[in-house]
View 1: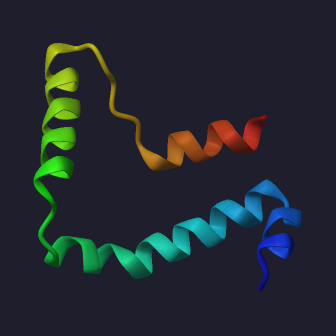
View 2 (view 1 turned 30 degrees about the vertical axis):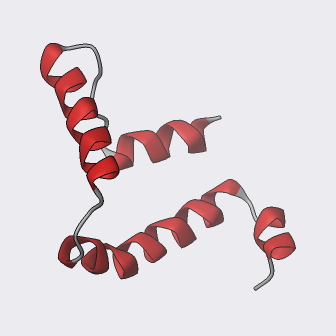
Length: 69
């Protein structure tokens, strides 16, 4: 499938493809080490959540917001 074909897909199909890709790729990220730069970025984001400056969203909620638009 080409990039042009993907761009032409409806949003719901794009999200389904993205979910399938994440499910396939997710195990690779759990086993690999992250760089110091990425670790610092993740730590900073976690700290913002801990302080209440940011809110974590569940993927189904985010997906449903996109589909509602």
